[in-house]
Image 1 (cartoon, each protein chain N blue to C red):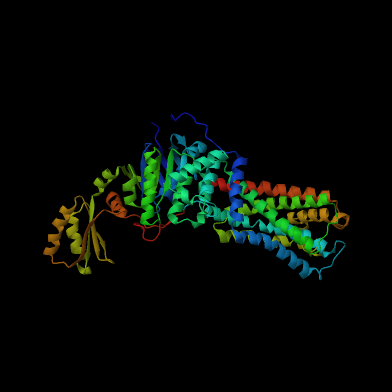
Image 2 (tube, chains in turn orange, purple):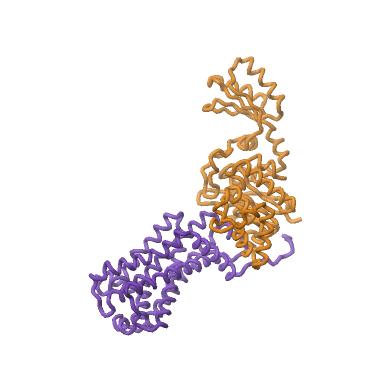
Length: 331
Length: 268
């Protein structure tokens, strides 16, 4: 079967910034592929290339076998795009928005109306269909934006940070909507900064760093490689930080990380509670005053650190990857 | 590389997609009361102010100042209203509309054409209001009704032509403020024309610019068509001369700026 995405040596530069630096990626159709990475890693650039919004400077990128640079029309006919900024018109109703996009897909008036009605029902927007979008909540707008990407019945749905900035309830709702679509056979490529999102939705995850794919596999495979958990210790006294780091490094799958400002030490561990039970007596022997001890899932930056050996770059927000909202897990 | 059997991609034609996009822009206009109000009131305000502010002071000539200045004000106001295009373009881009439209299987120029068509349609609303106001402040036709209708149609052609200048400005500007600034550079340029005072009254340098720039030839065409024989005598050529000149200017503006705009838009 033709792969959904086939990228070979894809390079994209914006002035002095290299957004994609020889990206290699092959992904089968009929699955959800999550593209994970910090701000500025090249996720949005990849989506923009697949959506034919911009062209690669070097290398080839094929979508269902169609070259994005040479057969953009064939690519456009097989994709649907929903962005991180809901591209819906606030002064039109939900229905009008969808009908507009349907008409642009070449559907006649009656077909466009029928398609839109179907999509509105599918996303649970029937009740608000004839209200102006400016009266919609953020979650409703995002759903409508998703709807606009569906009216062309795409084979591949591109979702660029679909839930960034949404409240938890809306996020869960949108995840459900995405899962239902996948159930109907649509392939999905989504970018996200949230490990949890990739975990919940994706069959495959590809981690992008500095314009290259550095890891690719199922969520389970990646976790195995990065360790299952993180031990996090917060101290009362800054002076003991180095000692604690030393103790944690002994149980970790990589070096422990120190944060002077918050008096925290963290380490990625391969096991779960067994590592915690090993480390606590060691700390007690040293008579170190602990404020807080936690065992939790690794965050993206920690997965990142474990995979790459360096912390994710600080978000300098090059032109293509806008800075996530305050409180995003990476940044 | 083996690919799936070649599917003829569905594609909306340039006309069809332009119409759909223009429809969206028009809806947005009519549902934004501030825009409707500005377009309605702005032209009338300028008309009334210029007519009564300068009407007593500036020498009348054979057309009378009202007969002279109204074609100038109406034409330049319609061109100014096109400035909104620069702003609209930056807004559409910031809103993500461009990305959505670019990802669809439609001709890319449809996005810009839809903007130009919609803006010209809203400007025809502004023109209608200004025409009514012109008669209210004492403007009278000296030529035939057919010539007057041709004059109205020409004004729309001119604003459509300048629309492409503003669309290009909007595409090159990084944000709304820059777009407005860029568009505003054109305002003084419209003053250096025969809009408000006869070119013959200007010092040499200004006169050379004013006499040969597109806005002047557009205004003279409207003047010759609405002012009848008196205007043709004053201007020195028959109306057809100015109509042809102004249409040539319009075609040149569209050709140059639409090409620049489409090329810029395609580049992404």
